[in-house]
Image (cartoon, rainbow, N blue to C red):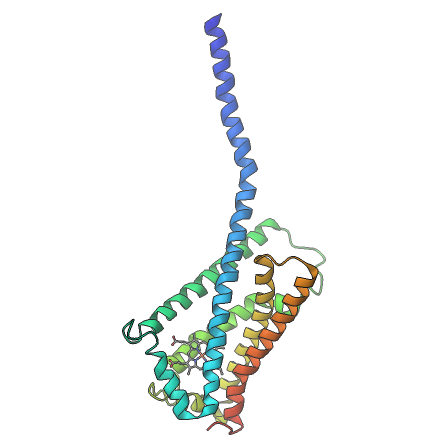
Length: 253
Ligand code: HEM
């Protein structure tokens, strides 16, 4: 009898424990997935902010073109000696390049995983797809991002390595930029313009989303985030477009 009771209790415990474990696993699974989605959004926000910071510094540097060839070329050479003598020459530039590459890869990978999860959560498409889904900036995130990525690859081959530039003189970046936006190379200027506008749209929605991810919740905060995103994007687009515009109009030659 004692032995029998023991066996019954043992079986009851044995069968209950795995069931409880399965039940608690099932209860945990969705929340674990949600947590990692939040983490992915935080990665997107932080890497996005890092890239925006670079874009602003790069824009300010580019505007040195209005101070003449000597100032601009001097600035480009200075970039190679940042943090010397603490670090050997060009090391900072390479660390920055590594950081930017990691940020871009992490940003794209998180976006791809989040998009796949969103699709998996809604395997059947909406029958009546609303014509307007969010702002234009929100709807163009994926293609805008692809255009910007293709542009950066072209841009590095154009102005960093000089491979695709008509002058391609690493010692004279001013001459490279001026050659780039010559009137007969209007298609290059057009591609730059398209990419910069894409950056603007991408940034507008990106800054707004990042603010939400990082804790902005109130209606007033939302208005401020929307306005800041618009202003920051417009300033960036204007600052970048000023360079090709100045070359095309002969203000910079
Ligand atoms: C009219 C607009 C722009 C001009 C005139 C410009 C100019 C330049 C120049 C001269 C360089 C070479 C720097 C050097 O090696 O000394 C450069 C590099 C670079 N630019 Fe731009 N840029 C523009 C827009 C952009 C935009 C919109 C992006 C990003 C979306 C961008 C991203 C980069 C990156 C990632 C590099 C490589 C930096 C490196 O060599 O480590 N640029 N740009």
